Amino acid sequence: MICPGGTSTQTMLAHGDGLAAANGAASEFWFDAVDVGARDLLRAVDLESFWQASLRLLRENLPHHSCSLMLGIDAQYTQPRTACHHVAVACGRDYRPATSLTVSGPFLANHPRVRLYTYSQILAQDRQAQQRRLDQGEPMEEWAEFVHLAFWEADRLLAVFSIRRADRQPVFTHDEIQFLRHVYPLIDAGVHRLHALERERLNRSLIEQALDAAAAPYLLLDESGDPAFVNAAARQLVATWNNGLPPSPPWSAWALPDGSALPWRRFGMGIAPYEVAHPRIPELRIRLRRVAPRDGLFAGNGHFLVDFIGAHAAPSRSAGLLEKLSPSERKVALLVAEGLRNYEIAERLFRSRRTIESQLNSIYAKFDINSRVQLAQALRPTADLHA
Image (cartoon, rainbow, N blue to C red; front, side):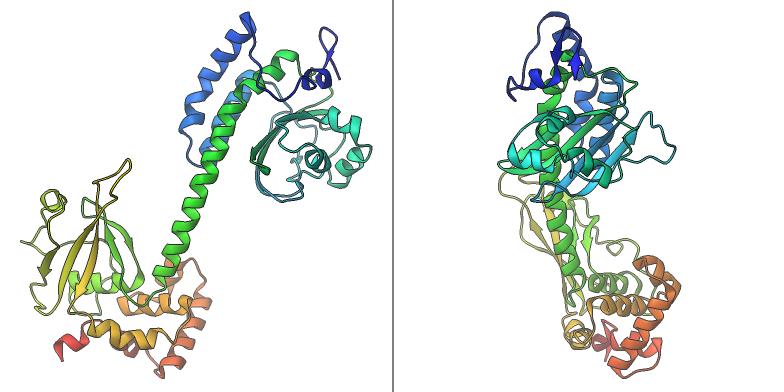
């Protein structure tokens, strides 16, 4: 591909993958353009906001046929796990870019840690690339050239940003290639940030799933006293605390009894655990223990673990029953004990009513009971307290 001034894209890329700086008007253009989208790119903490910020940067500075951001790429550099696509000027009404890197996979394998490359470069080195393009269902009339930005963590390919142009569009100019080199560090930082945040979200999600399926109650409050995490067993005990013995309304929000509001700010300075007795069930108390990071940005900003004291007989009594159930059945059983109907449980757990009914029949069989009332009585958290 020949650009104005007789400089080919391949020749421009042959100077290496170092991020080039331009002079004069071109440099001013880059900084003005980057300033428009840099703030949004730097602030993005999820894939959608990052993708939208990237699109704004391209729309305003780089005309294109379509573009894609592909992430979670396999070791063969061919198949991303997820992708975002945008089509600006497609020929076919139903055209959608392929979520695939089969065209450039061999090139990436032969050029580890390459940051920027083009379709023209691949064709010059790989005669089978065009056939792979056809095999993956990419119509030849849709686009004629692409520029790919590749983002790496050591030798692992994290993501590829693809910008495509059709035959009827101008070729990528020297200034446009340099613009992409200039914004590369911004996008690269965002890709690494997204990967780090997604790992944290995954770890938290797995921990929450494990705790939610546990028979023991787990309740974590933020520094204002609002729930940060509560599992199904704790929801049942909170419902008892707020509403009395089951059957009670479904738990909706944590609320301490009247006259015993916790002085969060004073307590939050790290004094001894704070206990509150239930006004109507003297044997039932809660103990709040402050947990806080010792260093880092949020050092001193604590959360509070809630222990249910005097309710130990109920969890131990029901724990044996709950252990008979699968994690999925356990959630259904505890929600039934809260007083929810089948359709409410289906909505809460995003399942069909038929699935809930089937699981409920399985629970009845495992507990050797035949009604919702018997199930609620078997799991009643304070039954032993009033015996």
